[in-house]
Length: 466
RNA sequence: GGCCCCGUCGUCUAGUGGCCUAGGACGCAGCCCUCUCAAGGCUGAGAUCGCGGGUUCGAAUCCCGCCGGGGCUACCA
Image (cartoon, rainbow, N blue to C red):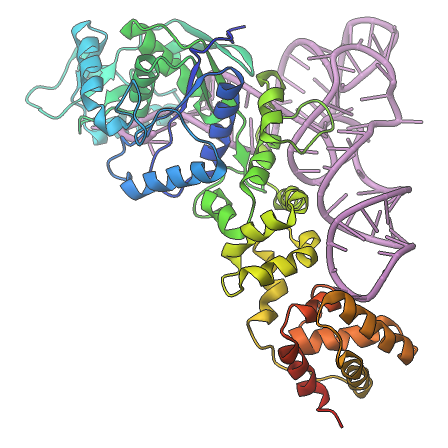
């Protein structure tokens, strides 16, 4: 096995700053971090900003923010520096140019002057003839004269490309099926399949752990590493994809759940999200489903990684998040709830926590439950019986100490006196006070509100004392 | 189209030839608890293991074919 256990293990993620921070980036980062931590290795963050059209600096910030939120911190990166700086590909252009020049000088690559239109025509032609498309090598054999704009193409040497995937075992590709591909675009920027292996080699990455969509890219990158005379990484690991609920690939337009920041906004705990993400691609072989991060570092192995993509399921995420929320102690829950309840002071949040804890699939759900504390609900219309119960309750609440236990006792006395079930008394109170049919237990519902405000809402519905 | 990966309850999965009348989790249903909603407890429904052929005394597990899904096939990454 290629997983030698020494401190020189180096892994990386290479996200592109072309939009919001991606769920997939989080997932890949998690696998990389687990592996790095387990083997005392180094986790590198490299920014893959070679697409001048779509790349934006603010998107890079979003990636940092998202990964920091999840606690998936890196050892080397554009913002932290390190022995292989710079870590932004746009700042490594000279390096790629040098490598391209080397390939050119060695006759392992050549300039291609074909226009996109010409290439398109070639491709369409092949398609029409039902022939697998490969670049014609026109510019290798018979380049058009008088053109200045060019790309650099790698001359695919042919033969089998074989490598070990930590998840699927020995993989073998026939490079004869791969046409000469572009390594340097006409704007001078490297393509992904060029920049990535050059960086992996020069940054001495030992284990390339990435999404399964890159499995077919691996032979391209390996051929380049070989041609450049670098040693290959020890191994590759292609992790299963996260699919949309309908089994299709997630797209930015149709699938907001791709946006990492959505989870923070909704009040998913970062540790719960990580726990869910790991379950989408791996299991320990036992029935354990909830793990601390350290347990994951301990338990994670590639041989238990799933081979097929998994569908994203909000229900399971909600359950896991609820489990984590319930496991938080009161102070910690209150602290995490604060950003979601800006209208409430800390003391009120703290008093509400016991009533909230088992009722939150996500932190943002606290808003629905506590909204009545800062907004005045419209008074409900109640039938005469309900109004009668309300009046009895108001009477019972007179002079009680304004805290849950005392309120509860007082109300129960009223309930007993009524000879009816508690709901007959509690529901009208709930509706009058919150405007809703769902709220925390009635004693908390009342106690969280200042006494005079609570009583005023009751009076509004049932009328004042006689 | 070509190459590659994958295919067990609705979903995530356990399972590597007999322990599988296929196990767990989420979700769902019912009951209990209960002031509503949750949480918690118990019970239950739910998968002829994509389909068809083999191999074998015996296959979800091995082989072949087919079908289905996904990825790559870009001067995107």
